[in-house]
Picture 1 (cartoon, rainbow, N blue to C red):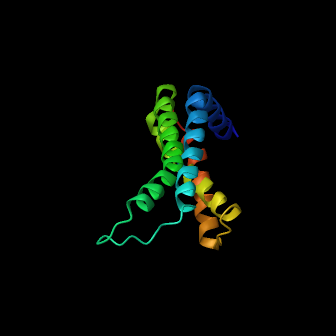
Picture 2: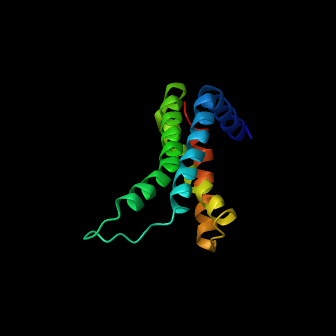
Picture 3: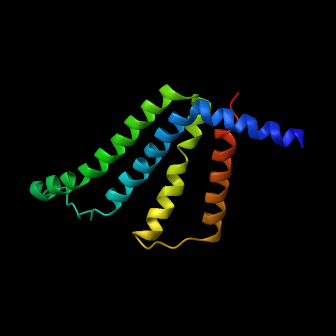
Length: 136
């Protein structure tokens, strides 16, 4: 019983010590999954390099900008998060972007989820939970 209490105490202390960084890293992970979603939603034109339609190419590149901006915001939040916690705790939390990406892909793009994907997401979430609560 004492061991279980120590684990909960350690997790609680770790969350207090790294809490602000964890929150910022969660925002980062969301942004890092929304950026690629925005890219995925842009239709890629068929480009013939021998006869380039520059207006079409520039229009395509402009449509990619929102994804880059959101992705960059995620990187900025990640950099800010590192000021408020331990790198060994915060960096693995970035893997939550895979969880958010799967949720977005299913809900917005109507992609299919396999049992292996569900198991993988579950393992990522367990790993993030244990790593987030394990710093000393």
